[in-house]
Image 1: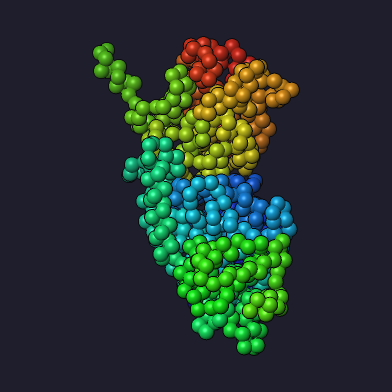
Image 2: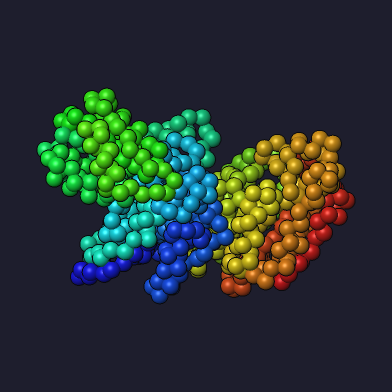
Length: 350
Length: 248
């Protein structure tokens, strides 16, 4: 049964998690995502699930680690400075192959930055903000509907691959209200094998969960095993949206909140007869490099639009691989584009 | 009594794997592992116990205990234990932590877990130095004690005072059982086992947070013979860290 509700992005994130069977939420206050913990503090106990306000983001991610060890579904959320504090925990989660969901309602940085939405944590999310060779599946919603849908999907991906998954959103999307379809039946909770969890060794041999591999060649072998898993994820889980790319002569690549602004820009350029299309990566890792490569062969120029100083730009350039020129339009410091300024820029470069 | 009977009497607890420890000669960790294993067996909780290993000398605890054990990042075992206990409240969850793990990098985690009255048990091993990394100063290092990073002794003007974890935690209302003991001589070993058992019983009875601090020998890094290390606990270390029950 589908239900249409007017809901804030941060609350849609919560409901998405709840629909996916998230059994525990841990978090530490930080703007602009405080609605998440306030809402979860009420909703989770109502459902007989766990809510706990942690003493720090370090603790929050390690409480998530504890729940993940038991095979149950857990989530934490924060914003940029808090996500930085979680990087240690994320590395351990990846190293121990533990599933969980982490939401970053990104704000401006570096440092304390400001509290408006930004896209400047792209590198941190997709290039491994913590230590060691690991990858985190990263989903970038661009609507409140996707804050709900992708959060639910994130839990399944986490369990399927025993890997942390990040929702990389931003303060604008977190605070925005939109009508969305809430349809719990759409996401049937998958039951993945949990033959690795720690829940007491009744009727079985004791298990251990660890990332410390000191034996000669042991860690190398484990890293190759992770590599195989990451290649599997790249093969199966790439998600993106194409918007008016069929006849496009110019291609924009943008994610999240920037992508939806670009759609308005594309309406403007098309009125002028300028055929601009958009590829919106939904998974930032694995990155939709194949489709960008293919589309770039048919256009005159590629433009990457991001609310930062050029981060996804590097992945776009790698995908395009010099076939055409890749331009960049950026806006750092937690400021947002208007469709007009992107339009002006396109008029200049096209 | 023949030798066989003796060996049967001293048989390995089921909660201890038949694995060879990597601990240094004269180290107290082996004794403490055995005491925990005996208590877990006696309370018949092996199949519902989940342990959290620290980063430090006991990092391989999961290779020694014969029940479920998870790793945790340095200092974070109390947060990991909180996560486990909140979703599996009927399991017995304990952390095994050294003084670097618990009293330095994990200070926030231990204080807040204790203050929440989290129904878990903490086994806190205090050997007054960072053993695994070669014997640096720990928060628990005694004044004037020489370590790798205090070559002329811990200087109060530079390094401050030894951190007394039991005294610190005793002011927290969430803490229900709190004791300090040692494993340097048979009488203390017997007392330590009693206190570990009591701590686990508190958890079984849902009474709240319990912690047992154990003064433990580190002869290699203390640069003492094993027997002298045992004596040093009596003669020196327990003057700064007096044994006793702080809260019950």
